[in-house]
Image 1 (cartoon, helix red, strand yellow):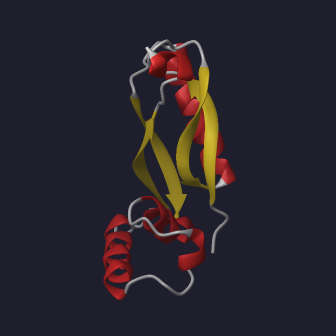
Image 2: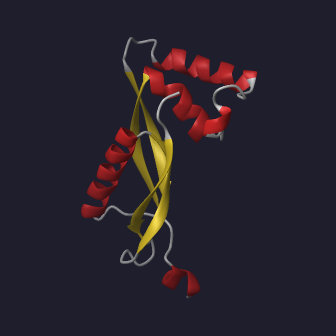
Length: 124
């Protein structure tokens, strides 16, 4: 098992862009989180802020299975070791084979982050 954790990060409210709100980043490794936060900071600095941000997450061959099962198939960290459905395991294995058939060492995924609204904006 790779070192994935479920991360949250303080990001601006998508309505007022002033107040920061705890925002769900999903299952990432510490290195992935740093990269995602840097990409989001660059988007915010450029004024490119929508309610849904799309960042790139780079996975090594060792990380891809867990990344896909955690973020796209809805598994929890506890279920990855021995409770993955055979059909899901097969689909992921097939996708991994396709991703790395060109001989590359990493795969890049589009990862969506949904900004939240702050309490002040939610009330109005």
